[in-house]
Image 1 (cartoon, rainbow, N blue to C red):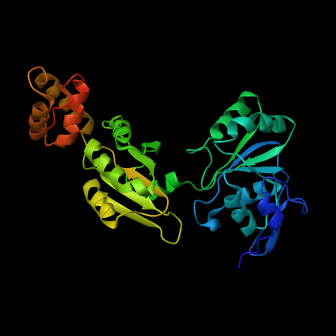
Image 2: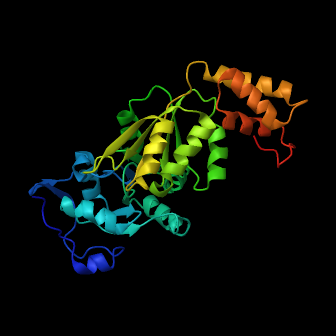
Length: 321
């Protein structure tokens, strides 16, 4: 049984205020206390679990226990991790809404020799969070920055997907609106790499439909609630996965989508699509040219049509395939 929460009520009500209890320097695993070694001054970027609290590393626990202050997105989330391992250190909120205001003060603390730990709500900081600006400015000032690696939804999903991992692009959070999302995906049409992206659970079905429309019927893996009790990976051709997700109505939990690279020769096929469209658009409407090229090459007609519009931006907006 994990040790009981040692954070007092006042600390929970005022999470940014240092704890009035004894100083840190220790942590506990299953009730057994351990002393944390002294921590060097500087900014320590610490990865934390993405779900299962047992995934935290020993080095991460020791770093958090010895830090002068822990910077976190949500003090309530980080408090649960600290309580699990009996760590009592001051917490300070640091997120996209207050980062610009707090950053100068934090840099002053670092310059004075403080030992600050930076964590995110889950996983490795700086992956789709504002922490990179603090790291960048600390390095520009010659201040020490140390990385304590560990869990990441990006790598966990990539491994779970079974898709190629030798060349990978992290696309961050896909845009919420379909039009913006499709425009973002167009940049990846000929990219010879596996793509990993975060998606809101409410937008998962629509995002998969857009992936199929823009990138073709590639293999995908939808990884949900990684490392948690209800962990699940739905994998297969994007059309089939999109249909399954849409049939469920909605998904719950954190969603990471992994998209396979184009099939062998995909980049050449894209160039061939452009070449044929360019030849036809001189005397055909985009819809007619797209229909002919899609039929000749066996490519998704909707994706070819969108490419035709991109190659002929002045096409009649009322022209539909």
